[in-house]
Image: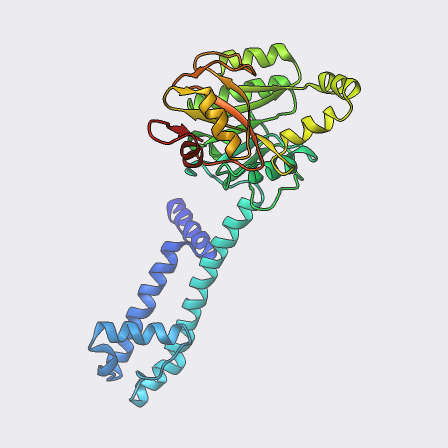
Length: 349
């Protein structure tokens, strides 16, 4: 008896929730019974051919009603009027309601930060939310023209003001593997980490590296020692607060602070961009090519070296080396290669 009681309440719950299998079962039962009623009523034109019956049922249930098929006998008309029309409309409305409800629930969950973007490929994930800085980060990512068209924000803030076009993921922790997976870290292209504290940022960097060994991670730290450890252990690119240096520059060289801010923003004047060469390249050739493109070479870095070389530059940039330039917009690899003479020049922008 308890088993039957549990089974009854289970079925009752499924019926109230209008589960998919219940809806399918109701559809099959209703249209099968309807076919039988029409057959008994002598509506052979509707029941002799399966496709014809399905077509008639679909046009009737959806209220389209082309009129090319309809009951001809009095009994068939009564079946249609008192059984098929109301039943088909009820089934069709229930199916639409179930579909619309599922879509609305999915959209609501995504809007509330409960979505799952683990299968998203090439996403740019921002970990941590700051009411003033995060919208500017999104604006600069879009303006940087580096393929950041899928931006996911992972935050602990309940009332985060999410910029338009950004996917939201909410979690109580930023350094836990589960929310980072939901934010798309396993297949992400890059990640920007700016958590509430250096300790949380450090742990988040380690968790990200555990999920994705190749994703490029940029993380902000207040403390230089913590930033150095994160760069060495987690292999992330660290950005350290340089308020004191910028303040001194602005005091000693008026206007320098404004220029430093402008060079960091992709939507203001010129900005620093980077590219990589896949084969050895003479720096003089590269410098001349950038000049013809109204760009300015400012630094180069050799592969496997952490230091950057400024003017005067080395004569040769080895394969795998990176160069940094100032320009109003990011230039494609093909444009730089063509300006550098093409041929054996191979650039990855």
